[in-house]
Image 1 (cartoon, one colour):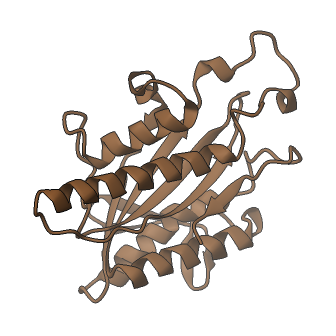
Image 2 (cartoon, rainbow, N blue to C red):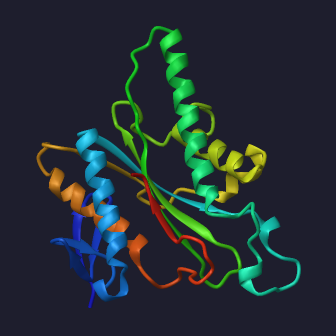
Length: 229
């Protein structure tokens, strides 16, 4: 039976098992332990680098043009445009946009905050021929601390949509429905703040979902998981 404990005003912690004394969403036997370890390592690096960390969950989907008109073997669906380089192009675009924003702020005489993005992603496929990606992005909270909206072209939301459009080679307007921010998408970790360990535990529990074995396509020569170094 799942144990549900209210741990945060906006989050409930679903515990099925534990990893490194931290709760996870599925049984350890149903998880890739190396993915859990890499996720935890990335989270730790993010918080060590920026004691005030903003973590954002986002789901990235592929456009319908990648769905074949006739049903082929699913291994044949994905050509060069939909390769593991897709996530690399997305991250590179996001970083480039932030660097351009920093230069703009500097020209305007505004204070510049460093913001090295760290990330974890997983690729899944479930009852569909098309893959989708689950992703968490870690930001310096002093630089970015909220998702923002469409009206602000410099908001985190706009930067992410633009980066996904560029990764896919699509127009930004065409990918708005392909970028999804799930419920409770934002987390703030402040090292040393009273209760920060609880926020940390809640976040890792949420990210442990990335390590579940089920729904990950295998045997296709493409990665199902990746993270920053």
